[in-house]
Length: 380
Image 1: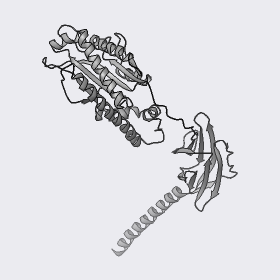
Image 2 (image 1 turned 30 degrees about the vertical axis):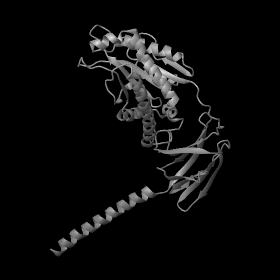
Image 3 (image 1 turned 180 degrees about the vertical axis):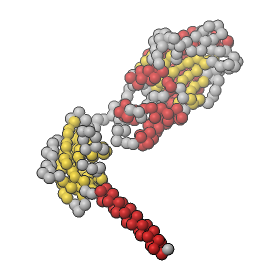
């Protein structure tokens, strides 16, 4: 019986020993020194960029530090040099020096760019063509001469007549189509604004054509609009509903739109005064765009309140509060935008009124007067 117990204990001890040896072997292999094969440097004159690539036979354990914002220190842990290793020749236009020194358990490199710089880095696993790599991109920041800001004299107002072409919009009981009414009002507003000094009105659509919603935003941005006004005529199941109202973009709509713009950070740069998003993670970039949109919404609300106060003088007001919704045409992150519902085509009385040249001109004059006040107040 004792022999049987001793035999069982021995087997357990042997099993523990073999397991320990196996884990020690695995650990030794994992921590074995990697070999640095080459350092390759390439340059991109258009991007003003130097790309430094470290090639190793194993996954690279590294640390990158920006020391005093003057140079980069790259530490490659548990790394040795291949025999006959050659340091790369650097282009002094981009890199002043690349210095190497060997530490106790790492290879240390100091890279000093030629001037102010920003950088990013990432690692790549091996593939059929290359071994393990650490890639560091260094971008030189060009010196830009400070130019005195010249106060903008011309205010650009983008006038968007809703619907058009194959999209008639709301249709009144007497067959009046929204697309025709709002185009007529938009042209009257355009004619009024053309008479004003320092205002340049632009029509998003000049005739009965269909323009996709996001194309309207692009067109306004192409004109560098300071204010975007989309003109519509409302409709409701309740045939008694009447009056004018104004909408701006909701905060929820702003956040979802920021996410769309982040799909291409390069296109998003000019939305926030040229601040690059390329070196920022998605969360930070989202916050920056959200702030930009929030500021635009705040201006949109101020502008809408002024114009609504002018509309009160010529039309009944359906809602005295500025509505907020996710309308696509309001989603330009850098242009204060509003959607004006002039009156209800679904209301027979208002349909009749909307068809008259007098009421259309009264609406156009009210919007014009609101724009003039906004310029005086410095809102736009």
